[in-house]
Length: 183
Image 1 (cartoon, one colour):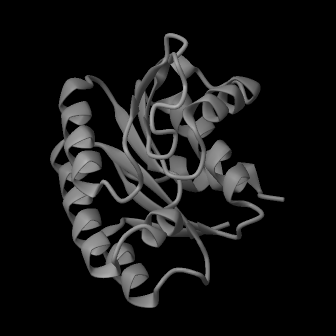
Image 2 (cartoon, helix red, strand yellow):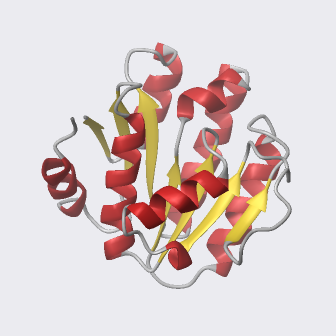
Image 3 (tube, helix red, strand yellow):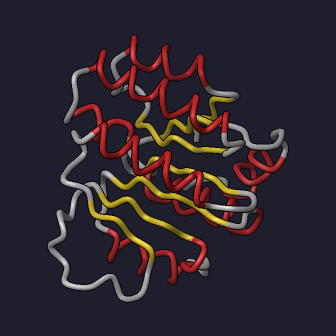
């Protein structure tokens, strides 16, 4: 069980637009993601979710169950491949898959520019994205994304499974973050 209160305290104590790597176990990753999004949705105007682990329909359903304002969310769905007929009025973009790094980068850049107010990005599974991409290419992608986030004053959370990520990739990503939180 995640200490949600402690996680919220750590997130709220960070400076404006922080980039945080959250490391957790596989069993706790969904709970960590939900707790983080809930905290950020309460303090931000908009959220951009890059989902490589769950289709947007599942995310929207879980956000509603957790009292997260889905109208604040824009989801880049990297797994559904437009299998669903309709977005039910929610803001979603379907991408081919988690290996479409250029499409993800362009879409995130455009969405950050289009989104006014205090915003955040959540990448729900660094590990899943690494399965679909070469480590050295993925590190370049992450460096590009995190640089764009800083330029657009956009905070972010990166969810990673502890002890399973390539150590070199982890070191590269962690050095670009403001904080690493283990839950």
